[in-house]
Length: 206
Image 1 (spheres, one colour):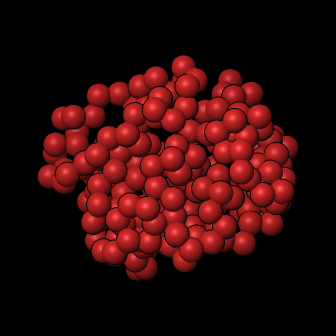
Image 2 (spheres, one colour):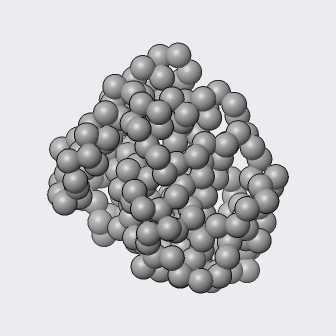
């Protein structure tokens, strides 16, 4: 929790309560349905919560922004982002039912009103969104194919609507195949921990 306050010191009391509650909620759910690897769990705030919040250092979502988290797993990055941006609305989608069960439990435990979990393939969604966020679910050309036509043009945050994707390593070749223009934000610009050394937020505007 100290790690979150280090980089986001201006949280409201309710946001502090919700971030602090994540540990017990995920511990309880992870004991039933393993969505965070057990060797990783003691690093929950570093590797999952703070990593998710790197997106917030690149783009602040405006009141009423519609954000889709594709392949949300146990709720990353959407759960931490929904806590941080209570005025935006998040839809967290995963095709694996047990992962959505965990997100539903965490959302209920937090009293989080602005996040809707959905068990679905992203291709089956009919709605449109302002932003799509995700964390390394598949190769970028395939991902862009899934989501590009679900993003509306406009600007509902500090960047124009588009994709904000958390990914590590050398991405040049993969991004070139998408035929989109990308901006890469190195996460060590925002967070000093060694874990983020090769990690990036990758952005393309619609």
